[in-house]
Image 1: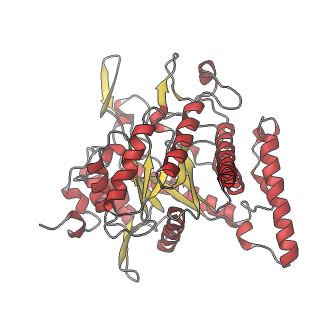
Image 2: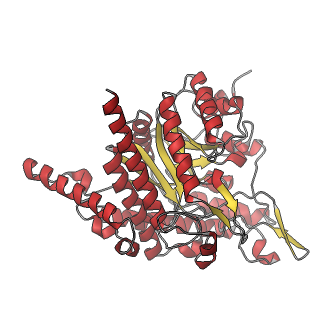
Image 3: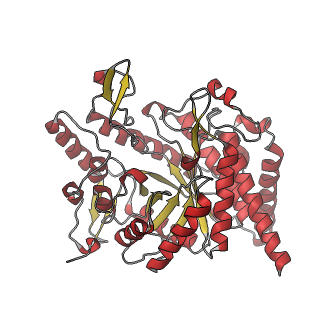
Length: 458
């Protein structure tokens, strides 16, 4: 009997498997017409961008770079506006500047954006006041209003999602190519909060230090350093809605490979990572770098099966494992996961998601996360990887460039009472711009402390 990775594959072979978290459409003929139209539209990304990211992730896997993956828990079509996209890019650039200074290695910028329009749900239906309707599955599928018409899965939203994703990524590209990411001018990235934030002195100190270093380097070399004026930026989203992903999957003849060209890096969530499921079947055949979210409930055999199925040839940069254990579980679960992967003889890129395992409900009924728990899980992740001879090569953060109050704690000491002031997420709580930058500063500070400790140990 042939192993799964050697079985024939094509972009629709997932349809022979059990597919979790997929919407039900009332009119299959309309759905087929929409998928056919989506399949004819130009791709959102191109294969050589995907290959470039694969090479960069391989360098992170070797400890020569660090991945910063961040963005909204779920994008909304209404958020596809220039100011909001620019704010999202700004906070990711600010965080990457801080991490570059503290970690002393290149930062790979990967946005949870331009396609994060579908979300898994714990139940297919929702009941209010005795009325039961389909759950809201994100703007790619249906609408949030609690009416039968709004909650019906609408195929036309797949086209709207494609359009919003393309508009978002094209604007990001225009900003980056136009010099928005120039390290000589980090003041372009300042959000309003930097002027009054307790972190402003630390941030501006880092920006000034990098600017002085660039001036010195370019002064003695007599030429500009190209990498400082342009920043590569990549997009990612959870590859949840398989018909949408299939429609943008193309065979590239010159490379003789299939690519998902809806994004650079799609990932599989915990709810859809079944070894015999449709998502693993789809993901095993595309040439993109891919990621899988893993949690404490995933036993070693399951994890080893995923590694083998998704990267049978141990290709560098191909597979990222994003662990999301929570501060209470990481001490027990992470060493077990590292050991399980090590037993396969394969190498993966390890990334920590300190958000999802630390979700709780406040006394006022708000879904929230505590900054101290997020930081605590990250600190434990760095330490455990180091102690086990592994390497934590990135972080995965749900964040926004807006001044929201969805997570408690941080430099301003937000409390449960603050949540109602500016709670805007329709799904999961995000770090606001100030908390996200603080987290980057603390990661950088911890890295510098670890280097100092190693020097003293010698």
